[in-house]
Image (cartoon, rainbow, N blue to C red):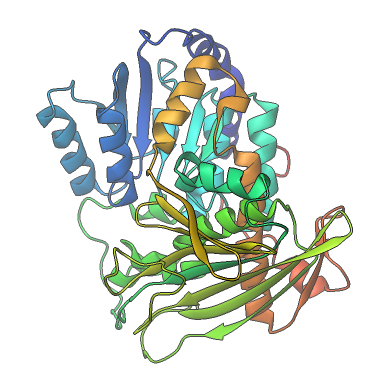
Length: 435
């Protein structure tokens, strides 16, 4: 079965590429399939529903109740009812679909993107684009080999943050030497849930995909899967990847040379495996000049910082602060859409802006033009930012600093850390060595 589906790209790519290359006119309809549509995936559906000349041709979800709800939603919006699938591999056999939009759990992102690229589809894939370091390389390799447009779901890259980053490039706050990413979200305990029978209508084997076999529990399924290493990457890889990407982008750097993370799962006694409090520090060598990034995850009873907050309301503080020789600049989440500058020793308010942008609309525009440079959040950038998440999690789990060598894509002198770059796959759900 794995051979069939990994090789189907060679059979399907010609027809799909012909459709994609035809999307040169704004009047041509782009046919999109949405995969994984419960939470963030529901946002995908609504974004495409709002676009002219975009048809949601198919919807795929392993939970039939969620699948039906989204199909009904499209129909109630006055659109044609999409085709329904529970197995994305079956969906990819449809040569009339131009692109797929993936919002499944993290552990399936790379595998499903590789399959889609092999089938000749363009891809919008949610953050983080990979579950581990190996997959971050493979997802880029697949996009490039099959000449596909792959957009990463780091939405800030299509927001007013673009204007903020340009101010950094133009020297508004002087020499930028440090970024601080903040992910303070009041996340309550998930408690403990017993093993139970798989609910009716849930295709659990497909949901597990490449992950190890484990009895079904409610905590390992909808949303709370983020807090288990087999499926998620903790809040650093859930919410934090947005601000990791923003921080790295603003600093103008790629891979770190040194990573150190400490933290833990504090206060709650529950099923969660990943840390709910974490501080990761990164050092970069930017053409002989050091730059630094600090990232903080905090889960409970926290404050606002640097003006970053949800319209001044508790509880969340999610954003990034950039520090320069002439001032500082804060970008805060609030649906990825505000920034403010503070200039000089007096911290006088400088340029500011607000606009959430539309990362999905940018993706569709690039699908039409067939120009990789039109993507605001190309997978090449998303994959680099995602490696920062993985390196911090490896440092935390091993309890030591990692010295990363980008040229060899490895941690220097640390075989144990390098073994954590790649998980063992549950066949046939495998991301191949050669995509």
